[in-house]
Length: 75
Image (cartoon, rainbow, N blue to C red; front, side, top):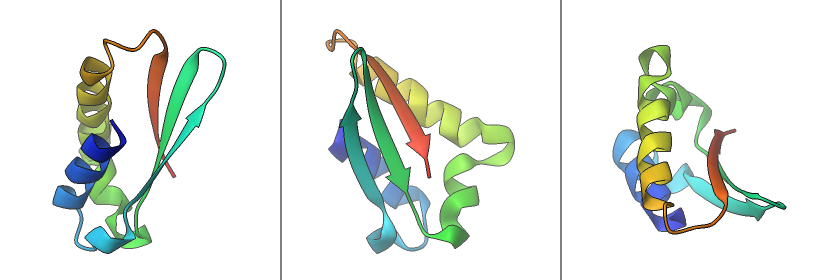
């Protein structure tokens, strides 16, 4: 899933070399933190958060096989 998030984010931003995804596991949750360049943050979030919501939906669908909840945070 980390690779999926990176691939989608790199396609959206102007500076793909600044895209970083880290994975953090908690008790019942897997959290992926997506970091992009300051100038590209709006492109990843989108107008009214639509792109961020779509990204979270895709990752959630890909995570169906996991027994944990999966979250994507944009930092």
